[in-house]
Image (cartoon, rainbow, N blue to C red; front, side, top):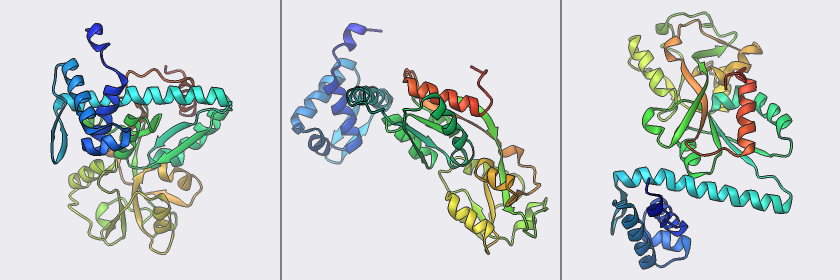
Length: 309
């Protein structure tokens, strides 16, 4: 690696590049970082000269990343995120306040695994506050790359979504057809028995959607017209346990506690084909902070994987 060459890259280069990409134009970026458009344009040209590649095409319609620019963006954002975290940590040391740990989680993990993890982490690192946010995998990964989240815990995403990220598998999770324990079809073993029921279905963008689509096609079910697409746990429970008596196609972790409490059951349909790996997503090649290391340990303890590393 040409370290002498890359020492020419300054923080202003990375900041101008990342903010231009995020804002979509030089004009918007200039307002955000308080530089003139000519200054940002010159800074970006200097960066491309140093790297020896074109990072973006600029015109009146905005900016479009080149292939090289898309790759460089991941690492530029990681660099700025690491610096931001370091400055926040210094502020915390000066003020005596601990920097919050920011965790993103898919709904199945948030409902089943994370309560135990948080309890274990409180024992390992009592002073560290934690914020937990659930959501769709795509938005969580974007926030992880930008440094807005420290870790994401959930199903492994598609390979094309993994640029700049690492994945540590914890366990495999099933998708189930969950119903109220007293549902008339609680013992149904055939998919065609469900055709007249209200179905709660994973929406596009949900981690399990491709698995569910393939499973149903493989079993000769082209579509269910009487379905509602949702990722809402609160809505799903209300529809499944309430008068609608819906059948909920969902990751097992989301309803694991409902099943354990006897409120729901999983239909005896073989769904092993929809099993998928659940694990820890982090920014690749980034040294984890002590709180992140301890949170990873808490996850491993909670899943019985403490001796796996």
